[in-house]
Image 1 (spheres, one colour):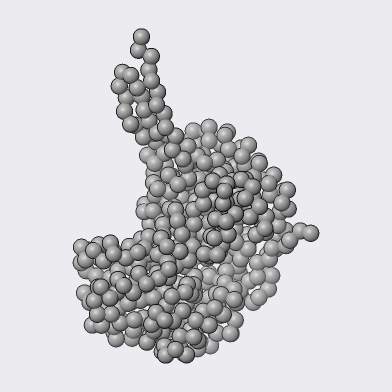
Image 2 (image 1 turned 180 degrees about the vertical axis):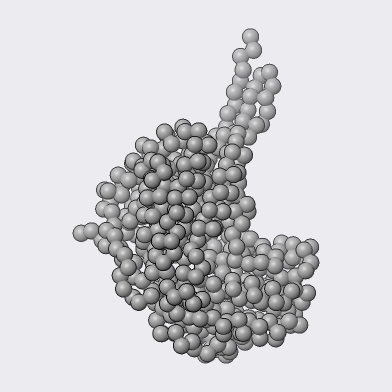
Length: 460
């Protein structure tokens, strides 16, 4: 019996969209069509692939007036923020700009006897499993460079953002990217596992939970299919005694609360030098008290609901456990908090790493703030985590930030900023945040394989 996938809107709990999942046989047929189409796609000139991909990106942008309220319905982000096209376009454009140099042959040497070089060869069929929190930007991180590099792409989007992949595929097909080169699919977990275990793909890119990443790796075991993962996070901020206090508070609290805290590299714990601690907390509380929690379709709303009631309940549980263990809350319950998906943002002090709210991923609008007295103490606390995606360091001293950053177990070190993905840098993580790397020249290397040429010339 066919499975129906349903997007439940966090606005009111109604079914916003539903699609029938593909059967196992139909799903494997998709993968076969992608494999058949790949050679012809890779044979096209690089500039032609770039132009088609960027035309597809522009076609998504042309839908933005429809996309913005659709996102609000699906995952709760307020319409006032205007969607994701800015970052979507920035990331794709950068990967288009660096494609030629990133994919060019690596010359090893040539003389009268030998010519030696290394080519970058597309894997073949790339399977992209994208998350709901930034559904367009996270998908394009892999879709654009994979297609540009000569792969075909099969995209499976999260059920919470059921319509995103469908819109992307429609846009790309409208500009004449061949239908079998970029396919959107609706799949159950079981069929997804069967496809990976059945060697349907040559590379899998997954963004989501630690458990989801483990499932992907288990499915791929023994197939030798490459798996790239971006999983959980518990990203720290560290405010040193010489920091610009106002800038640090504004940026770190925005990084903790924007998108109802549902950001891959959102700030989930903050360590502040004792000289600035009291002022930091006071300013942070003032900012959060000014938020307006409500319907994301209302232009006055600054914080919408979390994407699902169960996500909000996990955050409530972490807060309640922390308070029971001695943590102090600073934000009174907002009028818009319905006990469901609409959740009051919260700042906690008197927290410790014995509390889940400082260890487990919260992925919601809560942040714990701790006082520290030295770099060494802050580094030890930042590293006391199973995750490692980003760390945000606040100081006027670039050399100090670099020294501290060298000791932090993380994928990206920010100084005086947070919660931003620079497409010129590799987006990567360590520990339970996963393995692999997207965007930058390294993103192209992960979406291709090296092929060496050792050509001996006939000299007689």
